[in-house]
Structures are given as structure tokens and as C-alpha cells.
Image (cartoon, rainbow, N blue to C red; front, side, top):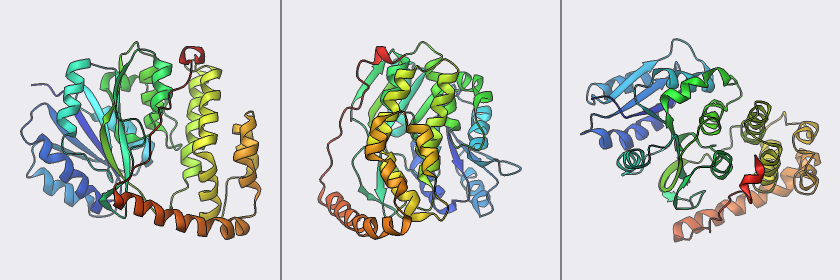
Length: 342
């Protein structure tokens, strides 16, 4: 029987969390012959290879490939697309967890709708404890789309473990991946949406628990908003997104993400993103100068004095909210009048 789905786990040097990821996935495919778990190891220097090979001895649905050299994140994305054996490919990060019914519900979505792309929901968990699960980031609903721009803007396609698409279609877009930017999965999935006729499925009822790092060791401003905006510029250059869509995305980014990413960048890194670079990317939106730009001008030492106590208070409040079972309301963030954004 041919494989319907390859769940491609991208991993690098995360032996401990990879074990948890595999333990959440493998029991769900034990009795299936139409799904494979494919681990793509980007030449990890830790004990990842021995760990995965020990799992392979017990799980015939698990396939392992160790790259001969470290290709960085985007190279591993490309490798997964090239080597996946299933008709559909689902990406999965080596530090996220699969909910108990993930595989069965995903297969049901594929068989019912045969969509070009599926995007799922996700919610962060804290302190390495899945019980401390925050609110889902998107509405908890299932919706089928036929308009590619509307779907792209609605989902964003920005969380790798939420992405599922047709493998053959993805391979067509490998040459468009910008290596080193960290957006390879958006480069591919965005084109899978914007160059096909659909349909496209958003299943917000499948919620992936995503590990949230409180240490802020990664520069989220660079690999988040800046890299993603660069990806959208490429899609616009290739005639796949219109200026209206780019402007809507920028306004949403400025309102929801950019200020906290700027603060994170200036609090945690000695070399910060210059205000001039942010102005070049977002300066055509008036809201940038009110909401985000001032934060990029405040000296880092003063910013630490202002925001470190605020961050500590917010962490305590978030933990209390999660433990109490309270959840924030999720708003439907679909772009207004999507047909005008082409």
C-alpha cells in the first residue's frame, strides 16, 4: 500500500525533547501502514542518532536519515521535501508534541477534503510542562477555503508543526527557498497555496502543544517578523501577493508582534537590529511610528530598567492564568474584504 502521509520531524541537537516528540507520535501510527514518521537529522553532534536508531528497532513505521553535514534549518526543510515518501507531507518540530488524536484526525481531513494545504492550530506550553498549556493562537474551528490569498492571510502559515501539504507540489517550489533566512517552510507552503486552485483547509480544532522557551535565547525579531516580511516581499515580487495583502500583513505585524519582538531583541542581545532596518521594512505604515519605532530608539539600558520588571510580572500572571484554567479569547483575525487584497 502506498503511503498517504509522511510526518517529517526536523531535528538538530535536541535529543531530550526529540524523545518526547517521538513518544507522542509513534503510538498513533503503530497499527497503520499508510503513514510514516521520517526523522531528518541535520548532523546533530549529540546522541540523536543512537536515540533514533534505537526507536527504529522497535517501530517499523519510523525512518531515519542523518545528513552528512549541517545544512541549517532551511536545508533540512528542503531535505524533508526531497525524501518524504507520502502523498502528503506534515512537518513537525523536534520540540513540539502531538495531541493524542493528531494522526487519526489529520488522515480524516485528508480523506474527506483532499486539500492542497492544511494548517492546524497550536498553543504554547511553559516550563517544559504540557499541563501548563496556554490559549490556542487561532480560532478553534474548521474552515475550508477556496480563495488562496484569503487563506494565506488567515493562517499566516508561520508555525512549522501546523503545516501539511502535497509532497509533489512542494517539490516544485524547492528552488525558491532562500537558504539561511529561516523561512523555507513558508517559502514552500506559501507557493503551494498561491499557485494552486485549492481547496485549502484550516483545522483549528487540532491543537499542537508547542514548547515555549522562557530564556529567549533566539533572536525572534530577526527570524520572526523580519524574515517573514522578506518572504512576503518575494511572493509579491513573483506576482503571487498584491500590495494590499502586504500592507494588511504589515499592519497586523505592527499591532500584534513587532513591539514585543523589538523589546526582546534589545533586552537580550548585544547586537540589536538597527531602527533604520525596521523603518525600511515597515516605515510606509503610519502605525509603525506610534507603536513600534519609539521602542527601537530607546537605549537598551533604559529599556531594561523599564521592561524587565514588567516581564517578570507578566510571567507570574500568565502562570496563574494557565493554572487556574482561564484562557484568553481568540479573535478571528481574517483580513477584511480579502478579495480586494490580491
